[in-house]
Length: 303
Ligand SMILES: C[S@@+](CC[C@H](N)C(=O)[O-])C[C@H]1O[C@@H](n2cnc3c(N)ncnc32)[C@H](O)[C@@H]1O
Image (cartoon, rainbow, N blue to C red; front, side, top):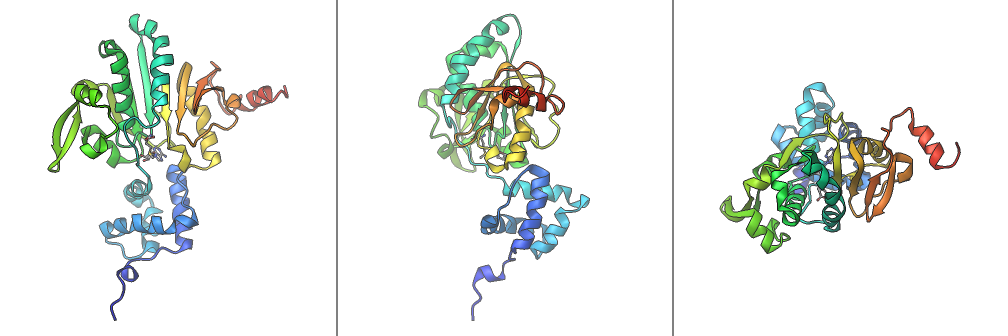
């Protein structure tokens, strides 16, 4: 009898899935629900092959240890969903150009900075869409102190983003006029592709960063894009992020989330809603564990 191929492959039990969930949750805030068992099994089978491990139980034993730190990163990389595309949810780019940019112009003219953070940037399409949109509206930004920080937990997407070379099927959403101005035709693995022009690449710095860890940046940002990232986190993890985003924003800075993401009770963490999934920082004082309760009391009218 021929044994169907999948039967000879390692099987992931719900108990092991739950134990892997505890690792991925602690490491990256990622939740692995029981209904995702098949997806997790198929994504991690490749890791088992790569590491020469026969069972999910042995794999779990490895990623639980200190010695398994590297493989833990590879596991998180395999589990993250990196879907992105150029000019996704474009209304945010208009808000950036029409509302944020005019306010920072005076500062730029006086030699000041304009900083944007793409947090959970995947392959870099979000950061380069911002660059193309803003340079199209205001080419003088090329001579200003304007930079984008783009970060992601997944080292594979960061390496891809740094190459800034996209197969043509990934550039479908780039308007032809912008593609001609800001991208150059090239080849990627023998396929037609486009590479971002150096002028655009020089404006973006790609870095590996786990949002669950300490953020090393000392500067503040005029806008933070964290879109289609927190959807993979549970409510407590999301709620712990809002004050942190508040604190890295400059006064009047914007936080942009994905279409199905919301800041719960935005006014209690120093934001007001100023557009579709768009939040503007309204409080100048940093929010920390000491004053968070008092602010929440204030906004709920109990103080
Ligand atoms: C669906 S993509 C969103 C990309 C882009 N922001 C967009 O909207 O098109 C989600 C990204 O979040 C990243 N991510 C997930 N958990 C993360 C964490 N704990 N820290 C940093 N990035 C994370 C994933 O690696 C993935 O590239």
